[in-house]
Length: 391
Ligand SMILES: CC(=O)SCCNC(=O)CCNC(=O)[C@H](O)C(C)(C)COP(=O)(O)OP(=O)(O)OC[C@H]1O[C@@H](n2cnc3c(N)ncnc32)[C@H](O)[C@@H]1OP(=O)(O)O
Ligand SMILES: O=C(O)CCC(=O)C(=O)O
Image (tube, rainbow, N blue to C red; front, side):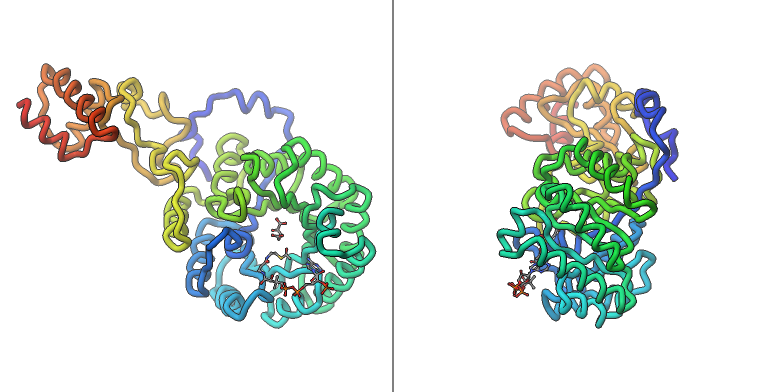
């Protein structure tokens, strides 16, 4: 539960959301399958198990452990994850083909997403007619269900599908035994309002069937679309840690959780204090870097160089939207071209350097000069040397 005294977002959101129905949000993590589809990323089974444990520790409800038809390596990873005693439900991934679902059943998984494309663009690329894909979906879902698997049908590129055909397909999947439905914005072409429209439309005929939203980030709206899906009544958001995935990536679970918890007051079950560590480890394993200003996990979120901000540093709520404690991380001042008098005093205190008040202007001038010459920050050693020279 979030300590609201550490959230400094004011009262505007509450006012604007007064008429919103109260929602809850569940997360379905696909870091190990859709995340691994990021170019050049190949997790080995041991790494997959480690990532699954990290993701489980965050409190997601569901983990997609993988797509067993891809390789023996994937099967080994899924087996290990399924046997690890995690809290999350462990899901498999299959195309609407019997051998794919068989591979999931052989691993004794109890839950599976079964996917088949439904937009005409995708169907023509595959050379499969609407009738044929319907038959494949019917057969695969039926086969999964008959083998004791709880199936969620996942219509690839469903946001570009003809809406009547969309409904026919999803209803066919339900008739064949699917228990849940995933709306899939494969190419992230739906704006948040379109996501709202589609989720509400599905909810209007699907009754109590849980609805998932699987989104990507090609237009930088991955988080906004996921939030829209939850507010429209979807129960499950698919995403990955850091938004790792193909092209511009997947919906970013930690970012969505932060927005839902802090801006919308929606309970997500995600332990935000663990998110930065999980992200850092995933980056090490997968071998990528993130912008230092990245929401939730960026290294500079609570580190400040600007002098005018440093002058208010003693009052975190004046310069930050929420407490760094919510992410279990620290705050700090760095010295550079944009420093002010307060920056010098704070950093000197941090480093245990004695600086008389009358020396601050000259130190500030030297700090700025060096930072401009370096085109970067001043290191602690450089600052100590400046202090000593001016003592
Ligand atoms: C297809 C997806 O979107 S899955 C998500 C993306 N993930 C990956 O691609 C993971 C890595 N990929 C791989 O390891 C391989 O590409 C595999 C295992 C997925 C596919 O292997 P391939 O040997 O290329 O394909 P495979 O021969 O198994 O299947 C092709 C057939 O599947 C059909 N097909 C493809 N996708 C689907 C689907 N989602 N539902 C039903 N049928 C499908 C094709 O129409 C084709 O049918 P046809 O033989 O009647 O023409
Ligand atoms: O086509 C794919 O990559 C698999 C399905 C998927 O994850 C998606 O459509 O976003």
